[in-house]
Image 1 (cartoon, rainbow, N blue to C red):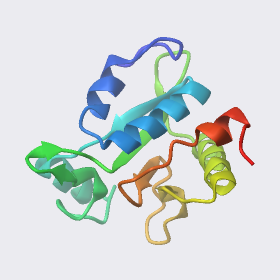
Image 2 (image 1 turned 135 degrees about the vertical axis):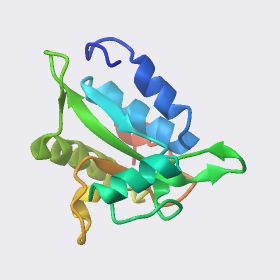
Image 3 (image 1 turned 90 degrees about the horizontal axis):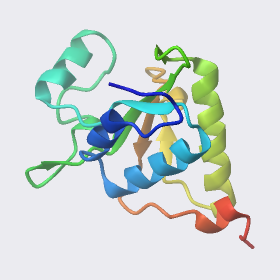
Length: 151
């Protein structure tokens, strides 16, 4: 269950447990700057992935999505789907909200001179506005960019 935006969220923390460490760092950056940002989906098992495919939410079968990544036998998703938690406790999936989050991420990556995440809103075959995924396993920390101490 999700909680008020100002409180920590057990549901998000549980979903992050099945995500790559670099994606955890990105979500920490997001949640520090967008207090109402929560995770709808992290890792998807085979049944959940195939159901999302049947519903037209993805074009990927199980094993083809970064939501399905594994590290040995352990889930290690390279993708998350997010949403905005309203003051009324309801989940909102607003394109403008996702665009604002992407603009924030894109600015950080541009200033750092590296691209680690991509946004599903830029996909050409299926606009997946709430989707963020890693391109590579090594994500920069962006500490200098965030603190303003970069060259």
